[in-house]
Length: 159
Length: 116
Image (cartoon, rainbow over the protein chains, first blue to last red):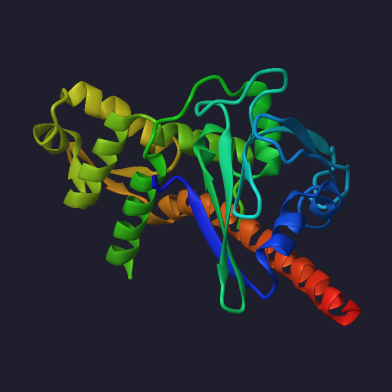
């Protein structure tokens, strides 16, 4: 796993099917992610996430972010690419990949999320919007790996 | 404290060059040093090292101090932390979203249990 990706997880006391619906149903997505969502549970499907001005993203302008579903395997895996310029297809150089992995456990579901290729777009929603306009080239791989390494080194030295 | 986006872009751009990262890494290893000494340990010319140091200096990742006839460079740890923080912010955003997903899924689940 390249370190320019972010990986987080949480244990949810609900069956994987319930978690799956929360993650993938447009009506539910608008309760934890964007203000509006047009998303299909089908690999290759193009959709949009919409942040309204003054909405959840905290952005004054609001924005519409195109996404493309990469995998939809209920109730285990859901992934999509986002951050690519409008009107172009997403690839590893112009978009980040977000993967949800659901693992049933004794008392619920472990939900992991991985976002990789972050450096291909930007570092938050506002940055993404801006990058869509002025980003030209793919970033180096392993950027974050180096970054994390460097940061840990300096922290070690200064503390 | 979040750093302005334009500044952040410049910071990431400074990182994007692999040779420049090697220069930065070498500087970290050596602590405080000069362009000439840095170039000795790297497969690039002194001029190239100077060029990369200038870019790193511009975004605040390194700072140079004149000591007599030479300039000694050192990494600025606070700035490096800024860069690491931008990754941490992405992680924090996902933490917030996951917490909301958890709350939603658990309340849906609790309701369906009551219905049964």
